[in-house]
Length: 226
View 1 (cartoon, rainbow, N blue to C red):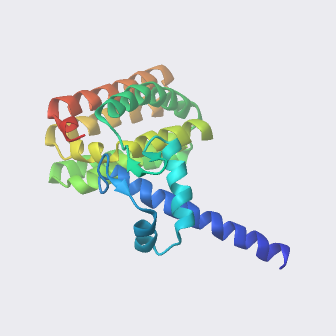
View 2: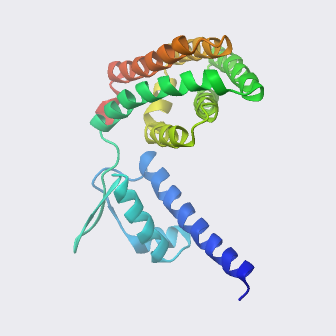
View 3: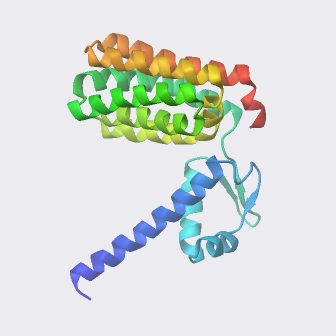
């Protein structure tokens, strides 16, 4: 086997592992698998059309993330995201997103700045029409733009994970008319602070944005579902 073919085979193998890991992780986070539910290697492998090996490896990685618990001689059980996890994530995000906004103020490109402005205006349009699915997608993209603009792969990776962990509760929150409108307004303020190169203000607003988002989750009773 040539070096090229060997490298391609290794690349495909890791790509398969990655796809299996991300699919199971997504299913846990979107609520397909409930807390304390047992997961079977064979059943998931059959569903995804793969052998048990990449499923087993995904289980190990998900256990490291705290989303699964592997109990010897018993099975693999979903830990998932608890109400306390949601609180912890938002408190941590409030600090890290503030730092991210500060760094984005210093490093954002013109292309990403233009996209952020367009994102805010599109969000306002869809909010006025009650298009909550589009609002959730635009909310995701706003934060991705922020992460891409901070010029730190470590911070970007960490925030992307936290953002994904609470996707289900964020989506439910944005379906609220009041929170959707308030969130758009907060995004606009963050965008304007970044555009005006006010790093201190951008950090403070991004920090406050996460605090308000969590307060809304508490008021809405959404954590009762966790």
